[in-house]
Image (cartoon, rainbow, N blue to C red; front, side, top):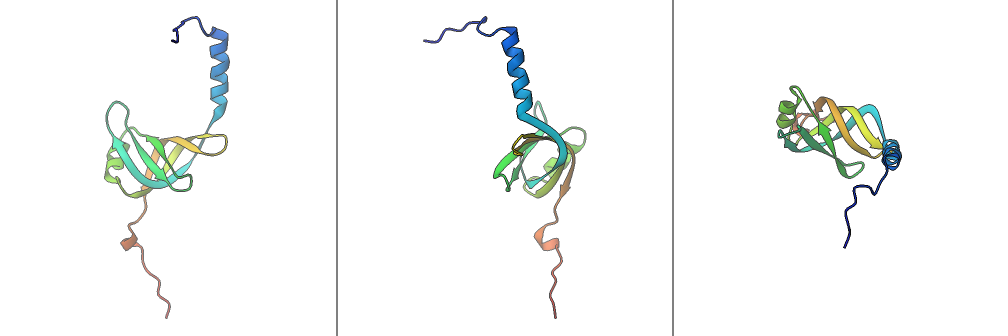
Length: 115
């Protein structure tokens, strides 16, 4: 049986662990491309973009009018611009969304047929 101890970690240990975790993630402006999935407007407004390069979904945090845009683009391929939080190896984890740009539907892209 594991006992719970409030004095298990010192303040110094907690501060050191906090510094280590801060270094695990890096933030930088950029964009994430993928299919917009899983949108919610509950406590915190966010959606997830399934990004095929890394094969995972990235959480996008939105505010202002962006939640409405996110719902409009649900299920569509989008490019999301903002402050990306990623691991040092480059794997994106989340993005503070500044802009959502939808890709055109496949039928809206003109064909080129050479003659």
